[in-house]
Length: 378
Image: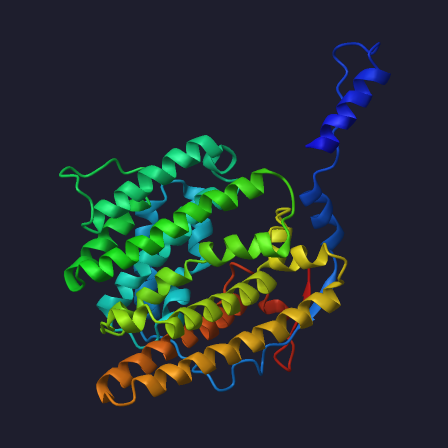
C-alpha cells in the first residue's frame, strides 16, 4: 500500500496539468507477475518411493455407482450449469473411493456428501467464479450463516427453528449431518463442529490474504494452509467409514494430534506441487511452491526440498503411530481399531497422490514418465 501511495503522489505532482480523463497506470499485480515468471517453466517430481510401506492403490468397488450419485447431488447443490460441469470434471467420486477403499456403500455415500459439500463450499470463496470471492464483507456474512446452519444440522444449536440456508450446497451438508447424527453422540458431533468452525474461520483469513494481493511468507502461508485443507474434519470421517468410535483420550492425545498434523503436511505438499499448473493458469500463486520460489530458490531447488521435508514428515508420523501402538497394546481390540484408524490416515495421503495424478481436475497425468515420475510444464 505504501508503494502505491508514493506512486500516486508522484503522478499527481508531475502531471497535475494532464486532462482529467487521462488515467494513471497501476503498478503490476505481484501475483500476476509471479505467475507470468513461473508460466512455461518445467520441473520434475518423483514420489514413486515415498510411501512404499504404506497402504495404497486400493479403490472402493462402488466407484461407478458413487460417480452417478455424486453427479446427482452436484446438480442439486450447484444450480449454475457451468460450475456444476466443472465440479463433475473434478470427479469427487474418484477422490472418495481412493480415500475410503474399504467402506461399505452407505458409509461411502455419507463421506462423499461431506466431501462434495466442503469442496464446493470452499471453492465459492477460493476462485473468482463467484461474486463472494471478491467481496469480503458479504463473504463474512455467508460464513456466519453457514456456521449457524452447520451447527443446527449437527444438533448443537439452541435454535428451535432451522436457520437460513445460505447456499444450495449446504443442503448436502444437511443430508450428511442427518446420517452422521444417527450414529454418533454429542462428543463426536461437537468435535466435528469445532473442526468446521476452525476451518471456516481460516477460510476468512485465507480470503483476506488473497484479496490483499500479496504473496505470503512461508510461515504466514502454512499457518492458514494447515487449517483450510479440511484434513482434521476428514480424519473424523474415518469413524464413519470404518464404523468405529475411538475414545476421546486417543483422539485428543498428543500422538494422534501429531499424526494428523503430519498427514496434513504431506497432503499440502502433494497437492501444492501437483495442482500448481492448474493454479498458475488462473494467476493464483498462493501455493507452497511459489511462496518458496519467491525467496530466491529455483524450481529445481524447491521441489526436491519439499519432497525431502515430506519424507521427514512421513517418518515422524510413523514414529507417533508406533507410540500409540505401544500405548494400546494391552487392549487387543482398541489396538486393532487405533492402528486401522492410523492406516486410514495414511491412505488419505496415498489416496491424495493417486487422485492428484489421475483426476482431470489437475490434468497432470499426461506428464507421467515410464519410471513413474512426472515432468510437468507450467
